[in-house]
Length: 178
Image (tube, rainbow, N blue to C red; front, side):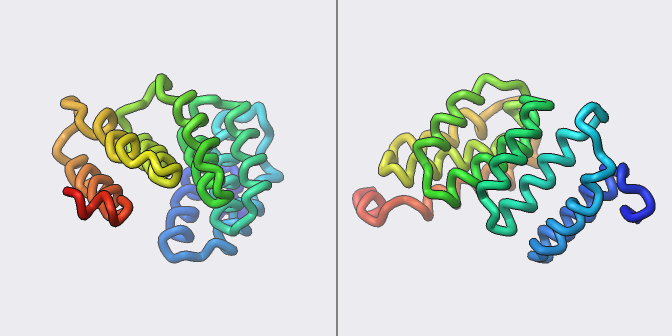
């Protein structure tokens, strides 16, 4: 379908999701790269396609190119949460937790702080703090993004998963004290 309609961003996102969940990073990258020539920076939604490309590059292990593509997406739309997410993956995979903390701290006031995807970004921030040995900060990171009373019951699954994930990543000596 994308061969005939390379500007169908929804089809690209659905296909990208399938590629991701089936672990097919090479296909994810090839698919998004096949539609990129049809997109121009001034087209609505181009930032989202660039962020999708950045994520595919990151999943393919091309971290430098992923960072460049995410920055291109952010130049078009500074609030593109998917591009911010790619940046966090790049910081994690290139062992730059300090850069990840600085990046997230600069983004905290951005709109959309209650979305599920933003929660995942807060999780990355917590992991950066844990990687830096800042266990208390890492475990405290879950509070602002997960305890919002405006969220509905569907977010309980995400809250539970994030909390469990952070708790299992604590250093062993911290677990023994509690």
